[in-house]
Length: 256
Image 1 (cartoon, rainbow, N blue to C red):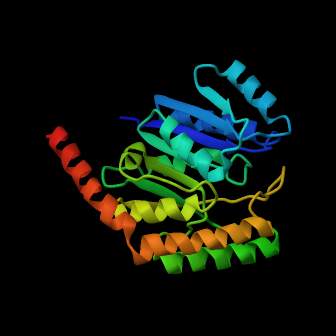
Image 2: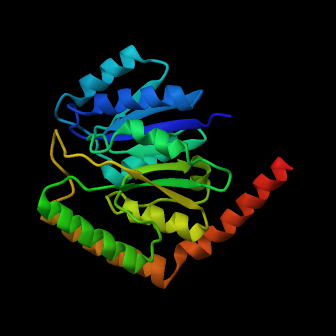
């Protein structure tokens, strides 16, 4: 049977790219799924993003929907809200800035199996200015090391996950730290990952929201807090692993 899939894109001043992401997602989902939805949360954009989303909704009323947030949820808050809003068996998300090709969702769907819970993309080659590439690699290896993360590219927001994961795992971050919080908690709960190489492209429209000194300072403080909770105190392993085991037993019993 073809999987049912919710595809989500966070949007902030992505008027020049969000329509491409939505259209490409619809294109591939029509091939790989008989039950799907595509939705976008706009986080208070000041460009024409909302007008673009309204036009998409007018053209594709049965396949696409969106929300606008007058008070910003921020990146992590958007992901958390999207997980709760998703209505299908699998949840896919990537950013709305078109640095990933939504059509490569098909590569992730091909890896769906009974023993797979998360299909995680990893960048074949990062396409960014040199300073961002250097910072990105330093950040990624630092995070992987201190949190003992097993995937190649924790900073690749191109993920397909079983929606039921979030019946067990609770996300808390409002910022970009949700990336490693999510991976660490899912890993510690005992869910199973596979990885797929995906392409990464130069940003063609808008500017990154993450590379500024204020955000870097907040992120460093947040990293310390999460390291203490998830590595030293092992909160996720103690809290979520037993729930994951109970969920697995319940699913096996239902299948039987």
